[in-house]
Length: 469
Image (cartoon, rainbow, N blue to C red; front, side):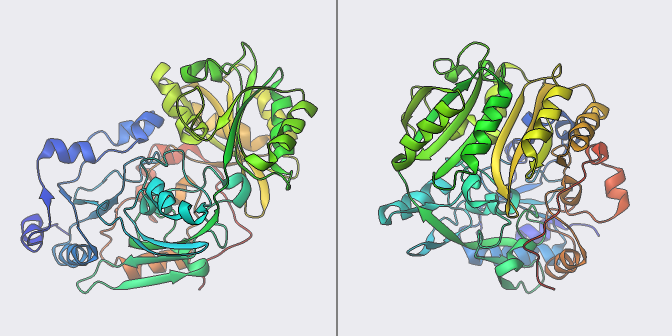
């Protein structure tokens, strides 16, 4: 199937298009290269052919129809903050900058509906005057778009309270467009939203999303230091299961990780391990009591975004941890292990002992499919794929389940189950396999061609929400 780019471009009328190869190549990158040397190597010569900037849903429908007729691949793009290669074109085609679709469609109390290109920080700004905010967001909240987060994200700041995006009720509805000669607008609700969530835009172009909101608490940030890392882990676990304390962030950095993040210098203590937390202000006294119970020391505290470290606390957690660390040492990488209750503290202790000479742990607390979990791994100097596979296997032997952050492939990444229902939906919405082709791969040839796919993570299973047949 040969793409007919001239015919495709001629059908777009006045839709803004950029064909400058330098600019198009620049926009064909996301954050993956900074996070994974495997993805960086495999993305080296990958680029779109054209960058399109649809102005509204009518433009998106016209692009989808033209792509189906000319057999041109389409890759939706938000802010480009993804780190699993979600936004990197593998087979050329057109990159769709969706950021002009940035309207709040409506806001009704604890529910908001908005277009895919709105930045998450702008969406929160629109709902906070009424006392609400998004339940969760990535550490890249100031740049990330709603569609990018739902199409490529998984959890984030707030997940220690509300769970992961996939959990039932955390995405209320998605409106998506098929890529056919006569594109369809499909509304997904209930568990069906997970057909599109974390599919990397490979089975529908997201137009709008309907999201539940949470009370917009006045958040208090705290940096807490502990002389022993497992002491910090036990504190994090106790805070996570303290249901009476409303929290938004529980991030754990084993020493010397805090020393690799210069803005935290004023809050760290030499040789000590750090918990980075966000707690609703009315419950901060209870939080302080818990810190004392576990032998910790609060070394810095401030209202959200007002700390002496120069950024919101969440910008030193989740993916932002690697952003900061890589400024000092680009050789450090990580894997993904998910340690679940019951017994997550003991499982983490086994891994901390196993990897004591490898590198410091970074862990994030999140609720996952109805249970508490801590997600993370050591940060260590990269050698080769065999090393990544060995670290992943070690965490799994200690009791974690693994995901794979060194592959482009949705199924092999392990965070999204891909079953017959998912495959049938992909074929119905994208009959010519033009949406981000190569990502939602179900053939063994694509898997065999991916070095990252050989790392061997077990993948995550979910007892809860499942897409309807």
